[in-house]
Length: 343
Image 1 (cartoon, rainbow, N blue to C red):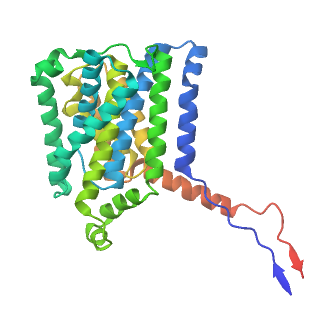
Image 2: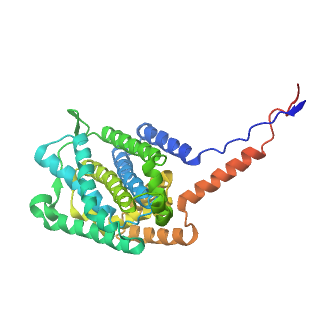
Image 3: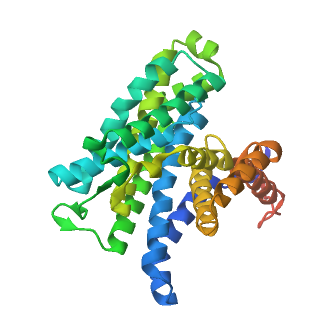
């Protein structure tokens, strides 16, 4: 009997997983690179840490919009709730940053129920309008409730502490923010393969089919809003401690557009795309900071161009790279010729 030995087909590399690993390595090495290059370490670490907080918001929006298919233009509201929760706890109760993180996420999660249950009956642009109104409402509350939020004077936070140790120096707060982003990225990645993650995807693809499979549509939507709001609240807490000051102007309509741009550029249901989208948007902000309104004009143009010519955003680019790498690996000649086995 003759049998022809054959090589197993090569698996195409996981572009998203490898990309996330490379981004993590680059982020870990950034302080060392800045130190040896003689750059303005304090400034660039602050910029990078702020980009990390935006990346967490982008991951939260990707979970809600990309995975669960629920449009939200009010993520700035949950971001603001988390930031003010952290600021109030810091100023009045002097809690450490870890406690503030959990509290900020929890309060934002509870606040999402105010929006989640009514939004569970809406879809499409109607849902976008409701969430947009929610973000404006939170902004107005922060501006008018002076006794709680300080109004337009804002609140100054205490020096962040973790387990009794100060983490106020730029390198410490940078790495702490990076660790939180890494943990959230791992959780969001693993959520995809869970029953909850699959329920989110089923509701996104077809509510009728999801209901036929026994998935509770309304509760699934509410849960998606709650998970997304928790992550946005954590990001708001980190942003508050990083800046050391919160004021309503940090959470206005402009911030809502910025967060929306991150997900549009990144593509739906793509964690790497969301993170890189946040980095790109933050870079545009920094580059156009000297001209008022320029960053919004650029972001508006980027959203328009992406929607017209690259509707899948960076996710489409990653898919193309994955197909190209797979085709290249399959076309590569075998290192050893197939052997004829005689039995």
